[in-house]
Image (cartoon, rainbow, N blue to C red; front, side, top):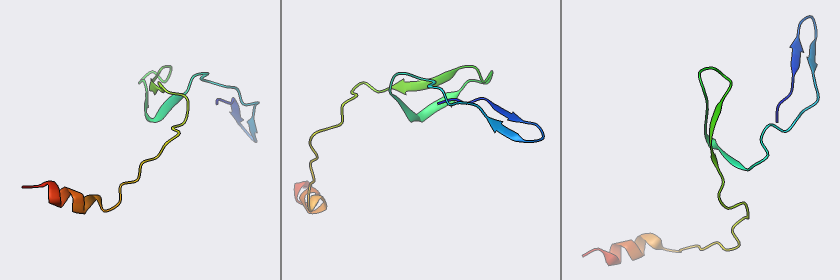
Amino acid sequence: MVVSVEAHSIFKAGMPKTLFEDHYDYSDSDVAPDSMHFLMIRAQNESAPNQLTVVMNWLEDLKRARP
């Protein structure tokens, strides 16, 4: 989202607007030195995972697998 602001004698914020339509990974994003461009990774899979695998005692399995 982006919003215009005025910070003169009083602070005034405008209405928020959508800045990007697609889904991006913002944890690995950066702003160009000119402050006019962004570098981001676009998410490939927009759906959430439907399965979670939990491995119990994985450290013990790792110890047994080592020669």
